[in-house]
Image (cartoon, rainbow, N blue to C red; front, side, top):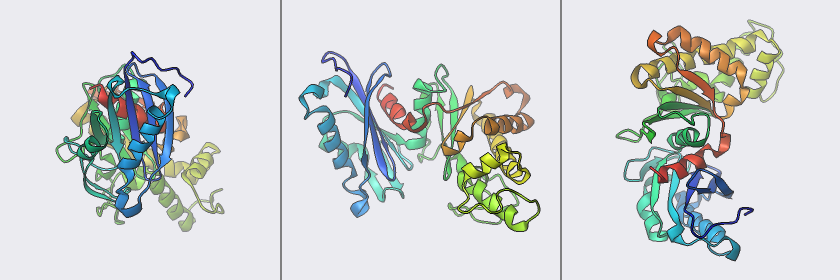
Length: 322
């Protein structure tokens, strides 16, 4: 760690548990990130070692090296983002990515480390991170939509995460919005937003159009097609690619207009890997949002996420300060 720690200061820890790696960060309570590191996600035996390995890593980083030593009393708490629905008492009913079923994260960690713990859904937590130190800084009410392999998101109202009774708030990817879709989503329904606006949905739509051969495209001969390829082709003026991303942006804009009718946020933040496409995506989403939103909310800001892969650790740390 490059930063010298003040034994009189207070800190918080943010942890973002992913399917392949677990990111961790030590923060000052002001929001300054002092150190970050990660370990592999051990999914052996349905992820039973994940929490104990997190604690071992924390002890190693913060307790076993003399120059890094922090007393537990200096740490206000640990926040953890989980890929799956989380109830208010810190229970995870299921996390497919980790192999967890009915895991009481908060209670189990209490037995392993004497520091207060807060637990939340990873997408909700990332939203809180963007509000704290990212594109949502200065706003109290915001919605984040993450576009990756799937579509997720989070809601913050009055600077607090809205998780919902079943922990499913912010599952925007499974809003039924494509009414003529016949292919089933991974959730079992047809016509989910995820089927249009995720990287997977964008790729599937491009492949369908390429197979139909309606329009000659520079994507015709691309092997192992990615969403990045499609956005780059669109930027180069490829008509098929532009039709595909316009379709994704249209459904995303309609979904956001619908969300506005319920939540009326100050700002929407678009994150996830697909958001790396940048301005071309942002401009199209804004266009379709404006076409569909109630006139009262036409001034709602729409921004790209700023913290990228660190949003989860920032938001997890911020939970501790609520």
